Length: 158
Image (cartoon, rainbow, N blue to C red; front, side, top):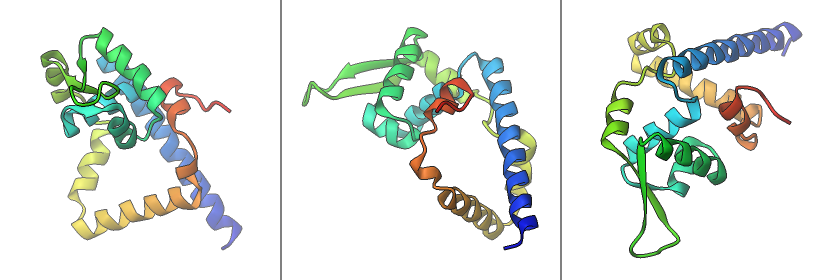
């Protein structure tokens, strides 16, 4: 591959990262929650009454990070937690009425213009784009990198 190709890929990824960062800040300011908190709330909405491990897998965050997020969400009365009657070591989380109302009205994590443009593409083209982005992440070994530092602070921490 030519150097210009790798340069173009790098520049495109930098623009994507910048756009996601700007949108994340905009959404956080609008709703008063961090992006990880929103991701966890959405995961609870999608999965129902759920364990920390299930949330960790769904949100792609460590269990320790999820527990910290759940603590904050519980303080804000957006979620409730209870121990399993079958195994007391297992804790389930669920949305409160306040949390359910909030998560129903959350703005999209991607900009509305992107969502509209993406939705207007034919299904096969959307699938191809998703596959290409997933392939790029795989090629960059992104599956081996924890997203938690970026998601919790907005900055990469070594």
